[in-house]
Length: 180
View 1 (cartoon, rainbow, N blue to C red):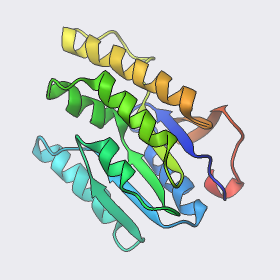
View 2 (cartoon, rainbow, N blue to C red):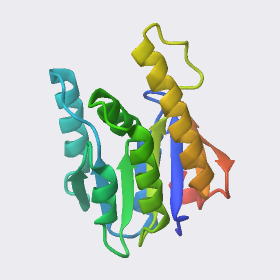
View 3 (spheres, rainbow, N blue to C red):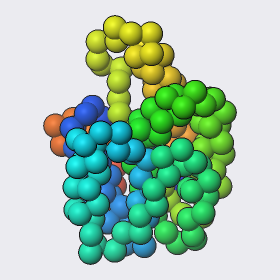
View 4 (cartoon, rainbow, N blue to C red):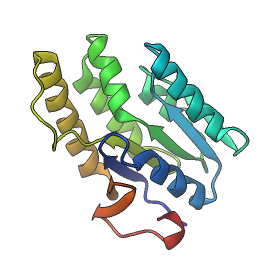
């Protein structure tokens, strides 16, 4: 299956978006890179990260962990590889908690995406359907995540929303059945 240069897979928490994105990457038949952005700030997150690592073990994934310098890590992938960036939501969280300029980092990420030697499948949470957060940090994050998703969607050739494990194409052409 031939992937567009950039695909954006969005959905809510536990929607099945990462599993769908992994299926897309596997169906491409290309060497697979998993660009992980999560950080283990607590035991629950450490267990989640380990569970994801274990699930990919022995399946031919090359894992790159880049919770902050994601654009540079993405730029280091090689021609002919397909990269799964999972996920932009953790990346944005990491940047905001570090008081980094996420807008500049987003522009850098989009520039790198425009010059990638192979396809990239980007996973991100859709926070547009939730309640308005109670804290100012929560509201700032929700606004930022919305802006990040809109910017990535403009650049992507394929945008798919996953809800309860079911993909819906929002932009672009559906891929071969083996990815769905």
